[in-house]
Amino acid sequence: MENEYLIPSPISLVSLVSAITSLGSLARGKCCHGYTFRRGFECDHPLANSLLNMYTKLGGVEQVKKMFAAMSRKDVITWSCMVSFYAQKGSTKEALDHYKRMTHAGLLPNSVTVISILQACALVSDLQEGKKIHEYAILNGFELEMAVATALIDMYMKCSCLKEAEDLFSRMPRKDVVSWAALINGYTHNGLPVQSLMVFSRMLSTGTSPDAVTMVKVLAACSQLGGIRQALCVHGFLIRGGFDQKTFIGAALVDMYSRCGSLEDAIQVFESTRQKDVVLWSSMISGYGIHGLGNNAVLSFKQMLKSSVKPNHISFVSLLSACSHSGLIDDGKKIFSDMICTYGVVPGMEHYSAMVDLLGRSGELSEAFELIKQMPIPAGPHVWGAFLAGCRIHGNIEMGELAARTLSELAPDHAGYYLPMINIFVSYGKWDNMTKIRKLIKTHTLRKTLAYSSVEVGGGICTFLADDRSHKELERLCGVLRSLEVITREEGFVRALPLMGKVADLF
Image: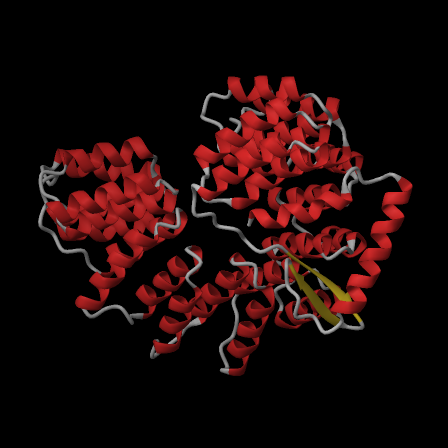
């Protein structure tokens, strides 16, 4: 255009920036930004919004902040862009902060803003804020817009409000594959894989064709269910649909077969996938870890490096967990050190949790405690939970009490974190300490997720829920358990089986 002695207008430049964003070329975007500045177009608001959108898609946080600060005028599109940026980055606090600043400025959020802020609420299970957004969507008439309703379903499922999500889904006038996937994923997130697969079946009956993302969510449900028969059926569906050669589908298949107890099938899928990326390698490493084959996991990691695939933070979480479950203490320590010094991966909460678990299982509780104290970020509940589990294994009451007190402050409403401490006290007959835990529990409204296990018998899935007495074979099951209790007591494997009944009174 310039060769024809024509000067591009701001409208033309908006189209150009949009094209550059689609191409993913940040360098060209910066050139275009410089050109707009030289031409004096920096005050054109639509063009500024277009440039901001480009930086949120292609640039880093500092570039986005700089562009946003430089804009003299900020409208709904500007603020929505920022909320969306932080929500997609997982920076929930910043997303909510920009949303509140936008409303305080007297601007009314549009449906795009609502979707972004709901994503942020879902990430941290902020039900209170999510309900406020839902009310706003109802008042402004876009509650049942497909994208908004789907975001609401996802938010309610992440907050374990299944009834609200189901009700909203049933009222949607139109449902696309993303809406169905949100419901499928929601049930799996809440530990209900059977319902996930039933929803998938319903989706197919409506004539809605699944995409690859939906199939990954279905595979996650199969992984949780643990039934090899269902796993094989879904794998067959994937092959017929032509999904099986997608690398990220391969990674999900490897994870599914590993969790369903068929490492052989997992290995076969891994070896038959032509393009092996870091996600697929990490899934295979994790699979070996699940089956207690830490040495195989370490060997697989070395093969990944030889294949010129660079490990990421997930690779190291999988590898450290495999070392932990296999008792490979020295390997785990070296891998953690190499991760930081050689590969430049900054340890996150999951890495520290895996390392504390590894040290705790091996009895190196003092070293685990020192690692927690040296963490550059405050240790979260999962880290302290791993430490508490180590204290339970090795009967360290003093350190266990410290971990329990810390967990009561970090996650006061989560009953699961108290159980290892209770087990320590029961095993050693420390009933005075049990009274302290009882008082701690009673001061909080605990959220106790019901534990369950499932097993495939005769081609069907049998699910057993903690404290459930509705099973039709209950009497026979109890008889078998009593027999096993006698045998284990006689063999001396269990320290205090008769005392375990007292624990139930705590909840």
